[in-house]
Length: 272
Image (tube, rainbow, N blue to C red):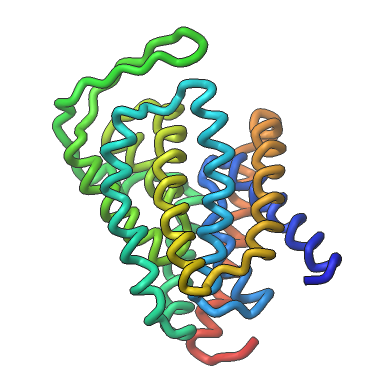
């Protein structure tokens, strides 16, 4: 890798990390299509490298959240176990992908994501309600105690499904998992983001190790984008209260739509 490419990847990671942090949906869903479009990665290499970047980013984030005591470890350890099947089995399924089939499937996911970013409607999880029978309590570093009711069984089932699908796409899953925790399971937003972050760190790290053993992780790309993403997340956290959330989401939804159209066109007609 040349110095120019390295700096470009660092900048790319910084921008993606900042935008993902500002709107609170992470950035894994952008790594895969950009690696495939800009650097001609195979689906397997793009997914493996993306999970590596996600692992780096969530490791840094989980450390900060743990210092703030925002992670509900009692809840997280149960949900993390549900995410492990997707992390361990997913890479073996990914090996069977073809570039055309994956581009088509991922483009459809991006169209859905663009709609979600633009509307931010959680109708997917509002279609049903669950019995909140499990009482949870968490005392944060600032001394504030948060008490809430949830449903651990539904959380385990949902995390299993989301974890499996997210590992098959290399997107991490926070963009789906966080709304799931907040809307359906009624987990307080700050606790949901921090707890989901930690679960994602566990699952993405295991998935990354398996992809490395399979030879589907570009370590130089992973490190360059990963470092940029971590720096971007720090910048995004500082800018989040100063920039219009709706404006950023609208712009990002437009960008995602363009990427989705490109991947859909490629899957149907071929081309660069």
